[in-house]
Image (cartoon, rainbow, N blue to C red):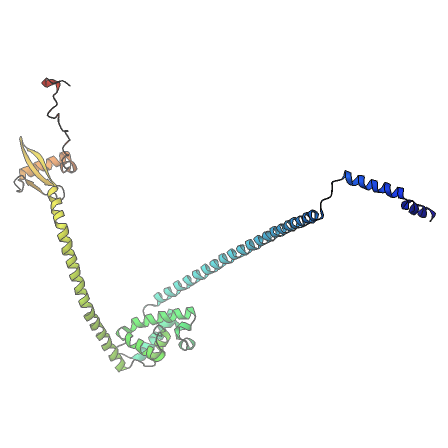
Length: 343
């Protein structure tokens, strides 16, 4: 306690205080002078902003790296999903193509549907069609569920069987197909003409009675007559247009053709014995005649054949060479040394 009291008394002495003050002043003089408070505050704020900018940039870089990894993973997952979907779609397409080929092959092996009897028994035809449907593999189109549903709401395989059965039934019905389609649309609505199960159901129920058979035949004949009557003027007009176009083309091309044929004549000298004879040969048509335009005699024709065998047909029919350019001459005021002039 005495030592502490002595130290406190010593610190209260004026000389000690003066010495301590001088030491602090010397230390401050040896150090960098302090800046003004507003400059120190401005420097602190600048340091804080720089530190905040550094932290923000580092966080942004880390966030960008994380987002890049996320986007790369998402893109890779999307590409993998797309490739998987494409592979699945290709597998489904191959399966559908194989199934379609199998159905077509089975349908070809079963043959054509039995023809609809115009005057025969309908019950025997129905039995033959039932047997053919079972052999062709189209029995899924004649089930109760398929007949109770419209064709657009059926599964793909059942819908395909219905369409194939409808096509075969239209071929089998022949001229009565129009009546069957009309009866089918009248009972089930528009767009059901491709439902082979419902079409066969209508036929089995006797939808095509004798009157409807006659109406179908008359309707088909009337349709053919109307079609012929409507198509005949169009065909006549088309023929007239084609003939007019051909005549116009002939009028345009005839002068050029005649000129080309006239320019294709070649003059050739042929030796008949010791006598030379001028012969005309056409390079396009191959026609031969003498200078008077008459046919060649057998002796002259044999001489022409010998000449062709000797030089070849290409050389025999080769066009003449164009005349060479001789220039403008010496002129009036020019005199050569041979005539006494001076060059």
